[in-house]
Amino acid sequence: MGLIDNINKLFDHRIRLGIMSILMVNENMDFTSLKELLDVTDGNLASHTKTLEKANYIAVEKSFIDRKPNTKYSATKSGRIAFKKHIEALESLIKKKE
Amino acid sequence: MSKNKYLEDISEIKDMMSRSSRFISLSGLSGIMAGVYAITGAVITYLFLLPEPGTYLTLHSWNFKLILAILIAVASLSIITAYLLSSKKAKKNKEKIWDATTKRLLVSFLVPLITGGIYILIKLSSQHYGLTGSLMLIFYGLALVNASKYTIGNIKYLGYAEIILGLICSAMPGYGFWFWVVGFGFLHIIYGSLIYFKEEKA
Image (cartoon, rainbow over all chains, first blue to last red; front, side, top):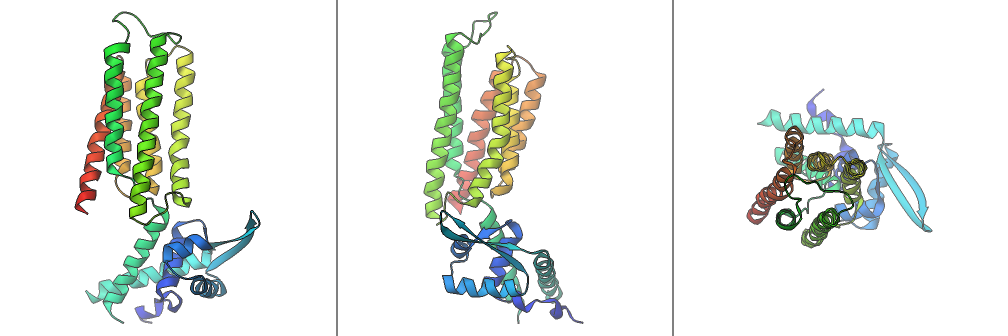
């Protein structure tokens, strides 16, 4: 098994990488804040969060604040483990090629 | 896939982690101004309000109330300046001044600070003035260290410096006023200038 096998295809995209990075250091983050931080459109962000949600890497919590829908995202335990592995794989690939 | 792509990914991860969890728009100039206000307040206090040698400041005297008013004025001016300059800088950086990170920053800063403030007031009301300067420095330092995890930069070192100064101060009774001037005046000006010149370079 090569190092390349540890590279997670799901994280091999700027926006999904960004979502995971943000959720690793924040307990949770709402949709609007994520959108502003990543500078993406609603539809774009929604499709990427859905992908991560399906993989069970992030959890979604929907609620209402002042009758407005509010969606909060947080990283799941398996998401955190997968992302850590991905970072380690990236690091070792960089070191190896030096 | 090339090594550059991996490096880009890593720097994207770092950037997102810090941008989403740390407040980067603290302004150096506001540190300098806080120091200037503190020294101005101290000079007024020293010239007009400190008790004659051999006499004591009592809680009900006018002098005590005026000193308290000066302290409150210094604190409010510093906070207002910090808010105005930081929101200006946040606008320039296209950051929001009031988001989840700033809320967490404020809470972690205010918890030790308010605890200290109440503690000092209780002590004062039972006639224990001696350690006021030292306690202010220590609790302010703890507040800075506690809040520093939500800021970029080296504000925790300012916090450590204030704590050390406060501890030395507690071992040297009678010099509280001077330690206060160094901690709230000079340290702020030095720290603020360091940040300010770093900003100018960047």
